[in-house]
Image (cartoon, rainbow, N blue to C red; front, side, top):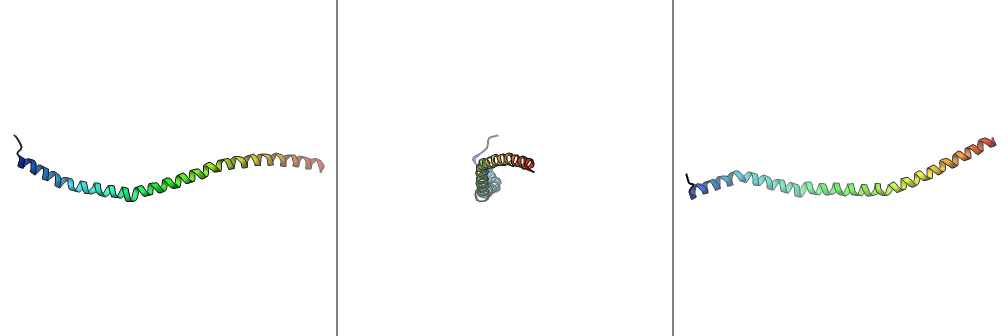
Length: 87
C-alpha cells in the first residue's frame, strides 16, 4: 500500500498539530532557563568564587596567627616558670 501525497500531507498536518504543544513547552523551558535559571546560577557561582577567594587568602592569615599563638604559649610558659621560681 503506497501513500499518496494527500496521505503524506495529512500525516504532516497531524504531526504539526501534535508537536505544537511540545514546541511551545520547549520554548517556555528555554525562556525559563535563559531568564531565570542561568542568572541565578551565575549569581551563585559569583558568590561561591568570592567566598572561596576570601577563605583562600584567610588560610595564610590563620597559619600566621597559629604561629604567633605557639610563640606566645612558649613565652608565657617560660615566664610562668620564672615567676614560680621567684615566688
